[in-house]
Every structure is written in structure tokens, then in C-alpha cells.
Amino acid sequence: MVLVYAESHEGKFKKAALEAVAYGSATAKVLGTECAAVVIGDANGASALGQYGASAVHHISSDNLGHFDSQTYAAALSGAATALGAKVVILAHNSVGKSLAGRIAVKLSAGCVTAANAVPTNDGAFKVKKNVFAGKAVADYQIDSDVKVLTLSGNSIKPEVIGADVTVSPLSVDVPASKIKVISTNKQQGDTAPLPEAELVVSAGRGMKDPGNWGIIEDLANSLGATTACSRPVADIGWRPHHEHVGQTGVAIKPNLYIAAGISGAIQHLAGVNSSKCIVVINKDPEAPFFKAADYGVCADLFDVVPKLTEAIKKAKA
Ligand SMILES: Cc1cc2nc3c(=O)[nH]c(=O)nc-3n(C[C@H](O)[C@H](O)[C@H](O)COP(=O)(O)OP(=O)(O)OC[C@H]3O[C@@H](n4cnc5c(N)ncnc54)[C@H](O)[C@@H]3O)c2cc1C
Image 1 (cartoon, rainbow, N blue to C red):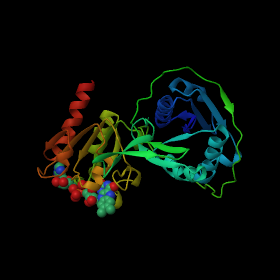
Image 2: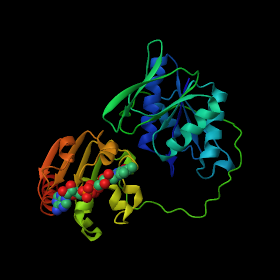
Image 3: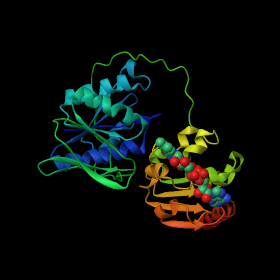
Image 4: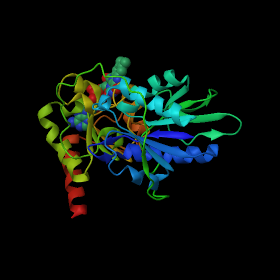
């Protein structure tokens, strides 16, 4: 059986959770087995996971899972996998999935591949694809262990309604008490999608010259309903919050549209963004390396182009 952790946030299943269930269902088909989802905490709306391919939904509820702690959650999910006899465990490749996958793999003595981007194949050997060498190549990873753990790169599969609601049944597993006490939580402001899930991203770099100039980037993002991002130096010097930093050492994203203004396109930046479906680069330097990775390039001053682009989008939308 394939077991998918469907993460919910404030009573809503994230897009990443639906993608993971769709991917789990496709993986189960390849293996000739069933896909079940497991939810932790609030199970409101969990029966709808059946619509995306889960044949069963299991609900783990415990006072020890009141806040996210990778140790307690890994214990709960590996316990669920063992109890249900799961051979493949799937998580989203986001901060939660990344912090759980290795821990779960150790507990289950499982081979683990993170950031898988295609449905596995099983022609005698279980193989799964992922981007390597900063996205410049795709590698096939073969997992020979009995149990396998995968994280799914965002926007790799489109969750579609293929089934109907299923019953949610309680699942009892041993969960240790958390060693972490959450004192306060700072929530990300705004109602745009979080970066790993965003389909539209507007990003800017050191070419912005000053944090006070970011209004034009926010206006462009708002006109599209896009999420904002930035290059690493911009986050390092405090012009933008760290959660916006994309690249090798930041968030890896795969939106349908990535607009980059005033970003040179260093390899470490490209590593996190070059899986984007369409890349638009605005840079005044015709030699900027980013142009080589761009689908569309505008060689001009961003302070001239970005407001015009925003106006054009607003007009087109009106
Ligand atoms: C180990 C390591 C890990 C790293 N990880 C990351 C990472 O995860 N993400 C990341 O982003 N970087 C990362 N870096 C840093 C990376 O190497 C680059 O230094 C960084 O991406 C450059 O940021 P930038 O493009 O914003 O700035 P710059 O390189 O300074 O480029 C600014 C660009 O803006 C253009 N520009 C200037 N003014 C205008 C204007 N008016 N109109 C249009 N264009 C203009 C310039 O032509 C230039 O191309 C890492 C580096 C190392 C060593």
C-alpha cells in the first residue's frame, strides 16, 4: 500500500497535500496497490481526499501532536506506515515534508528520495526521477529497500478529481511527548500562496538598489495575484524577509510563471527556479547570465519596464 501524509493548515488541505494524494494514487496504480492518506489533528474535510485518489483516509489524533514537531510527527507517521503495512510513504517536498522524510526513512529502514518530480516506474526495479546538478539534469533513482519514502516536488502533478469522498477512520499509534514548547508563532502576512505552492511568482534582486523601491514589485505581483520572492543577497541584507529567498540555499520553486527583475541569474539562484515553466527576465545588462535560462527576456531598466508591465496587466484584466 502507498501511504500519503496529507497536511492540513487551519482546517484546509494545502495544494501540496492534494498533489501528494494524486501522486500517491498514480504511484499505487503503477504498483498495483491502493493509496491511503493519513491526516494529523484536524480531520475536517479529509473525506474529500478520496476525490483525488485516496481509497481510505486514516486520522491520527493525539495531544502530543498539538503543534508541528518533526520528532513526534515522524513517530506518528512511521507508526501509521508500520500499522498499515505501507510500502511507499509520500510527503510533499515542503519544509514539513523535508524535515520528516529522513526521520521516517530511518525509522522504517527505508530508501529515501526527496524532491521526486515524476510518477515512479516499476519495471522490475522501483525508479523515480528528480532534478540534479542545480536542475541541469534529471536522474533516475532506483530504490531497492522494501519500504520507500518519497517527497514530491511542488507543481509536479495536477490534482484532479478522479473519485469520491471516502470514510475517515481513526488510527491509533504511539506518539511520544514533544520536547519542544511553542511560545509564539509569527504568521506570514497576505493571502497569496506560499512560495513552494505558488503558480505565479514575481522576484527581484540587488538591481532594485533599495528596499524602499519594492513597491513596484509588489504592485506587479498584486496585479497578477502572484507571490513575491527575492535573491539571497537581498534577504541577507534584510531588504526582504528570509522566507522569500529562492535558490540553492533558499526555497526551490516550480511555478508556471517566474518573473525576475534585477537578478543576475547566478547558478545558485537558478538552482531553485529553473524548473519554472516560463521564466521572464528583466535586466539592463545584455550579458546577464539569466537571459540564457529565460523564455522571455527584456533587456531594459526595470524601473521603466515593471510599472509599464503592471499597467498593461491591469488593463488586460479590466
Ligand atoms: C554557496 C552559495 C549559495 C548561494 N545560494 C543562493 C541562493 O539560494 N539564491 C540566490 O539568489 N543566490 C545565492 N547565492 C548568491 C549568488 O551567487 C549571487 O551572488 C546572487 O544570486 C546575486 O544576487 P542578485 O542577482 O540579486 O545580485 P547581483 O548579482 O548584484 O545582480 C543584480 C542584477 O541586477 C541588474 N540590474 C541592476 N540595475 C538594474 C536595473 N535598473 N534594471 C534592470 N536590471 C538591473 C544587474 O545587471 C545585475 O544583473 C549563493 C552563493 C553561494 C556562494
